Length: 258
Image (cartoon, rainbow, N blue to C red):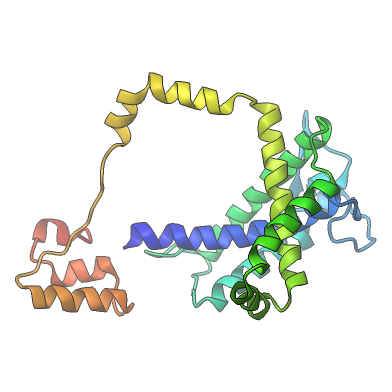
């Protein structure tokens, strides 16, 4: 149970956070305000930021490669709000069996911000930034696919308020994907061939080290007990680990959560 739930929560959190993070990148690609990602008109120094990119120990002069407090806190706030709206209650400091902590979310979002700033810098220096026209064209293609079906379109309007609001979210996602693809193709143009070659040359070692299945179990004496415990777990009344500890008659694994 824990091996499935926890990664899902992380994915939800980070994907939402990255969507917020890439708002500033999409604005830059689209020819919007540059410099301070929040476009507040204020001027800050690097020492007033959360962090940012440096070269030979010196901060880059262009503030679009810095992480401002407002950019970071907005990403964190909206991510945590989104998680709470889905019913996730996160501990401020400590990971639990199934969920990361708020501190863990904060750290991962900061890492994502640094990664995205790095991609933006590489793309700018190597002239592989996607154009606004490319982003708009791909965004239209994706959105048109979704709204072609009236039922899906209605669901989008219900979830996001309007097709226009949904389009803006898709645009940010498209900007992210195009930028990542462009950087990858520029930095490692033969990545597919290199990956295939590595797998072919190391297939036996990969099988030996990674081809395995990890499974937990709860051993009980009868089917009725198994069904009852399974229902309790599925309904969220008890975690798999707690159920194994309390009900499994396999004492060798019960103490380890199955």
